[in-house]
Image 1 (cartoon, one colour):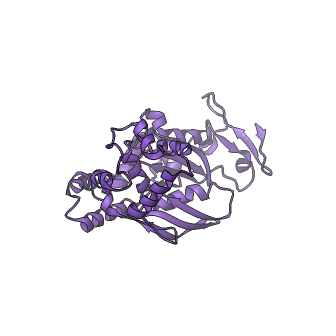
Image 2 (image 1 turned 90 degrees about the vertical axis):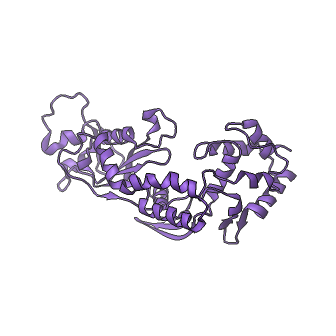
Image 3 (image 1 turned 180 degrees about the horizontal axis):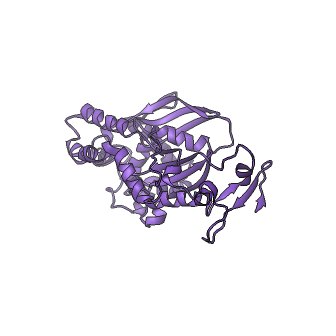
Length: 343
């Protein structure tokens, strides 16, 4: 054991040899085996060795993951792709959940709460209202997407419990089910940035594709609380604009956006062509407001109700892309370079 930097705390590590523990009082061995703990909680009156543990889960979109918090501190986190070996794995993070709980020696019944990353019902509301607002456009997208919601995603609570029991088959011997919480998508983003930070008070800006309705939020964090002050609603989204360019350049959405970011440093910030593209984008695709919000010209975009990110015929005829080669097949790095950075 070693001395922890905090006052009057000794950090210890439980044994790793699997032999019977003579000091296994009140389930201590089962809870702390293969993990670290503070002897202060065990030896000092009032300490009971039990922490408030919260399991966080992200799944069914892209890059599924799990994280575990003990007394508000992140003790383990992992993407499912590390265990399944499938890049951007979107399935339930069975391997990641098993890993983070094993790191702390916990089972499902030991958790104070389980948190899923967004609110499925609000997202379903957005889908229905969007299809209704754009009707009769979007029929193909509606027929391909809504049945999945009716059969599965509207029953997310049941789905999650079924998957959790598969992930930790022996983790709930006590038969206790902790509360299953569904915070809003952008609040989850804000919390992941603010709570691990060293700040007690901070402005919080989240910019995403879309959550339930919000695509961008401005919030304020203080102490344990986060207040969302303003938000930009779907379909107007800086993230979806970026993904549209990713798609049009021949890359896979929700996967290869980083390739455009990686190409950005090779551009010439002072070139006439860059200035011309910027002007055309702001003139034809985006209405940028004085307060920093933006409105997309939906005549050029198809993601709201279609099966692609943008209306390719519109993009190919607009001034931004006029004169460029036809849209390439995915992973055409040379074409992307020519479109964005040729002089």
